[in-house]
Image (cartoon, rainbow, N blue to C red):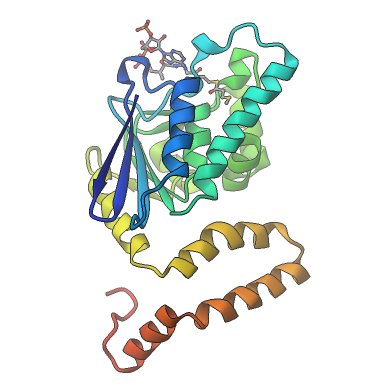
Amino acid sequence: MLQTEIRDNILLVKLNRPEKRNALNDATILSIENVFSNIPKGIGCAIIYGEGKHFSAGLDLSELTERDAIEGVHHSRMWHRVLDKIQFGSVPVIALLHGATVGGGLELASACHIRVAEESTFYALPEGQRGIFVGGGASVRVSKLIGMARITDMMLTGRVYKAEEGMMIGLSQYVVGEGEGLDKSIELAQKVASNTGMTNYALMHILPRISEANQDHGMLMESLTAAIAQNTPEAKERLKLFLEGKAKKVGE
Ligand code: 1HE
């Protein structure tokens, strides 16, 4: 149900339940937790993608049986715990999207740091139409990506966004042609993995906290982070190479 492969210093994680459109049952969610809690040493970036014609059809609705309220809370909190392992894990994660990226599938994608969408990607939050509510973090993460008015509309009306529109409103940072997503994601992952550990840590763990802090606290955290980062041996070496004309220029 989940397949992993290591290519150089990149971890590829594939949802592999195409017969159920990569619907996310508890077993899959728990294996995602296991994989992202145990990223092997030496890995610098991970890519998550889906087998078959769709990234993910979201929560496995066949498991949404007779849960009472408190069981429902625990189930949703389990999703939160697992997706936090992606957002606040040890390496940046790229979601490579195609086809349906809906409900819990969009929640999984929105926990990742970069989203690359192939042209077939479409986004929706069908929870509203199913009579339920998002439970895997969409109200927080998707709201932050596209704003509250848009997520409200998506859930009230079942609105579907296609790949290009999705990029325009902030659901993905990239759109690529069909079948080109893996190459693009690997290219991006190599860049991400070539950053210093401190830079990637700051982007994953400190920046989101800064963006939620008040301006005064945010600025202070920024100064502390900048000071720590510029003091690392890796940063000093990189600055030295640049000043000697040996580092790539911007855009190279
Ligand atoms: C599923 C699921 C699923 C497909 N749970 N089994 N998500 C949804 O409301 C989306 C529901 N799915 C769909 O709208 C469509 O399946 C798709 C647009 C994603 C794909 O359509 P298609 O024509 O390629 O596939 P299909 O024929 O609809 O489905 C193939 C099989 O996958 C079929 O099972 P089969 O045994 O009859 O072959 C479907 O029943 C099964 N399948 N999607 C279970 N989601 C943390 S809270 C998050 C809350 C949510 O995510 S709610 C949104 C749920």
